[in-house]
Length: 102
Image (cartoon, rainbow, N blue to C red; front, side, top):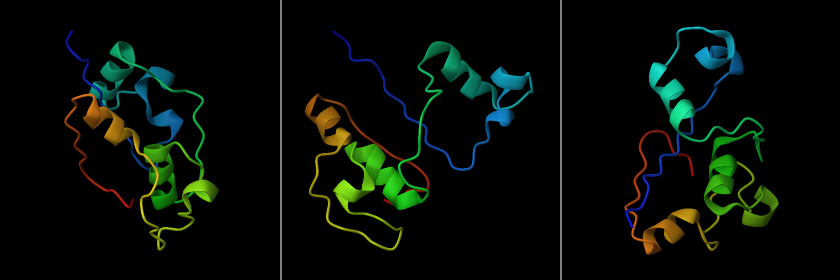
């Protein structure tokens, strides 16, 4: 059985009113296609208001008090499992592009 492609887009500073599918504004048509054909998360919450802790939370599924990255300036060792490891074990090739701060 062929594995489905998984694409996760994480972008900064996105206000809800910018998206066409909420107020009929012509904005980022390919993102609208992702919503129409994929999954949309409309009730997501931020675990921490900083890049590094938030991205580590996304990778590990843990809150900052559990993974110990509280600020962008701190960088504790990655001792927790990340979902990318699970995907790699299942045969996926993982890539990331752009701003990271993890």
